[in-house]
Length: 326
Image (cartoon, rainbow, N blue to C red; front, side, top):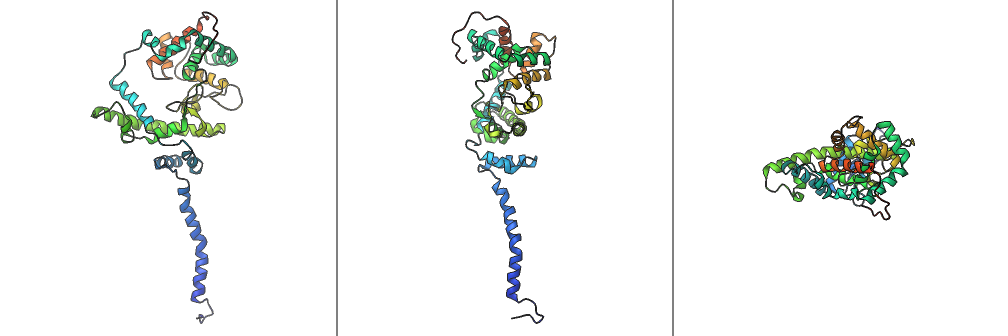
């Protein structure tokens, strides 16, 4: 039936209305689908992905990283960290001495062949060490000792994926996700409360490190998921946490990049870090050790680094034929 005023009939109006609504409907469906396209397959990651996006990092860029092979949520990483914190709080070890040092894994770095290997490394990168000493006043032996202990002079950069480690820790924001993996808490309420607070604190720390890793690798034109790291996400031959890479990293060779996997950049970056934590001329041996402690909060570690540095200052005892990796 035709409208008496010459207008459209009911069927025509319905077809026209449908045509007008169809583009809007398709646009709405597209908008609704976009968030799901940028969600991670593992639901453990989605809250973290939401938080990163709210901080201005592009969701579409990050979502595929959380779905990459090997990118699974692992709360045992945070549990391992919290267990160490609980032991340090409730079962502190006595201050280490030389005997403890020689009975530890660090003793391998005091072997003659290891020290000779480090000497070769120092000569190979002599220019970088000389520039770092001149610019920052940190002896090359201390820088060299740190490189030796941290990554065996760059020969071992970690077997973990820094992005996955830091993301797992950032997502482990309390006691419940890590409780099945803890070894130091049991039914002790005081330890449980400390573990819960520690996990929440370290989760916030890991989140900041994760963001820094994304920014650091973006500046290098790399994917954050391609960077090897330590069990807690330290990167490079100097094993900086990503926030320290942004803060203390130095472009030592003037190529416009801070690449902590390049000795030319890692060597001055270590010196810059130590100066930033109090290294200066005139410090006593114990005061220098206190600065080194900031690199890794372990009394045994700082004792080892300073002892290795002392030994590196001494001439080699004898020629060394074979030098297996420590």
